[in-house]
Length: 354
Image (cartoon, rainbow, N blue to C red; front, top):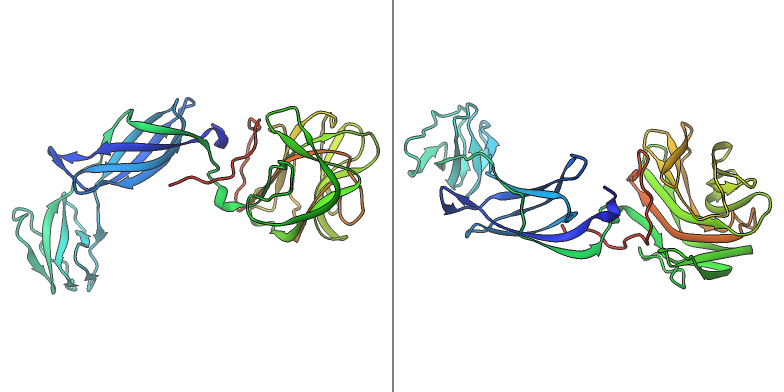
């Protein structure tokens, strides 16, 4: 399941225990067509047992709701408790104890009672009431879900730059860009307009992006070279002439990811539209994917903090003539760890509502 396939949804449910409304934490879990499970939302029912919670998922998948009773915290000597705190005995027998008056628990664990469930008892300087703990209650498949036809990015909070090139250099994250000699051209695909650079044309971020060898990251974009020639660099992260990284075309069939002297190469028809993803794994390695297929990896990854450059390798070097679409830079997340289906439309510019 690709992250861009996810949709917003609002799940409604009512929790009842022994035929009475109950306050419970509710977790929504999703089963996809490949048999994989994922948590897709959570919420809490009110005093009437009703919960309405935002979820993220696919309408075609199966979704279940699980109501979970509060198991409380384990007994600890001299533990201070406030009103409503729940304590669980070391020898759990199906009961937990709710503080009805604040205080401090004794050093020695008391003889817990079960039969007088409705009567608070002194425990240290606190008053506690026994209440039965119930096992989780599952319901599903859930059908009462109102889906919203809006794509979103589950990792939006980790995106540090996103450009759609819809006629300008607007960065959806709020960053600013400058440049010269660029224009915009229709891609002929679902990607809409794309940035076009030629000769000395380029676009550059006015802010730095810092990447380290121990932090996951993902840099991705679409490219289509339009003129033949020698070395051309459509993307680079430039700190200095001795510390930089990027993707370049060095002949008619090879795309190379380089970090200083280190390279990863992949064969590609650069005059056709392709999706490229540079993924730092956070373990001192990084990988290059072209159209969702991993073409290579490297164990030598540098740390760098510099500007994002489109259409060149750095100041006035290795100019690129062609189209660049949908630049997205994500820090802290390795979005692709194995082969994947590349996106066919613009990246979402909003996060989940959970």
